[in-house]
Length: 70
Image 1 (cartoon, rainbow, N blue to C red):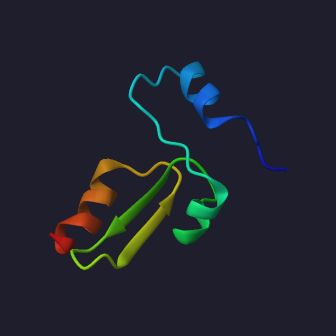
Image 2 (cartoon, one colour):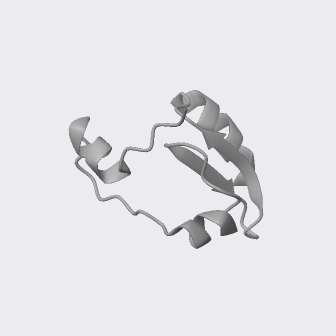
């Protein structure tokens, strides 16, 4: 069963203090669907999706995926 708590409410509960954007379902589908939070999408300079990470990743993992795209 998926947890369907409102993401803004959840973020406030855990102490998130930065702005959040909540997209409509049709926009989420344009990005291949958002299956969980957080979802990190890494695009190259040409706008091609190169990596989709669902959930928490350590900084080193994201950095190792991002550096070749720079």
